Length: 180
Image (tube, rainbow, N blue to C red; front, side, top):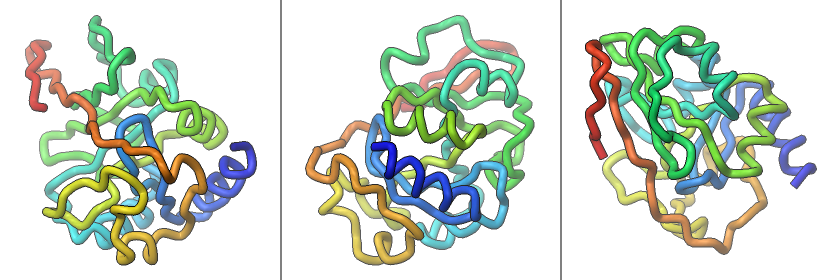
């Protein structure tokens, strides 16, 4: 695992895109603070920029650097992506028109170590062309996606990963809405 972290880290630091297993499904990732890297993912996925991407952080401390409102609910026992208000520190093309951003504290050991080593959030979006079903395992990922990633992490390629995260939104009034 350490070799995979080292190699993926170099790709992230150089503005590249990785294809990697997360705590939910296989994802495309990049530096969440680098607008050019984020744009590469939009291009690979053939996705409209109005459909924002999820960012992963390693822990609550990293999350607090991006938002000042962390819900008093369990967002770590099950993969839960939260749409936060007033996010700062991420690339502007990861923010929706209303200034919100989707962020998840990752539970996967590889992802957590990679993000800790990187020191900032990374993008995580399903490894598929927009409108096509999420891949349940590495072999389901299209060659088009694989060929456009700068690095493919060589871990857990035989595991089935089919459950995307729960998505909730913290509304301006502090209430919580479940979206998925």
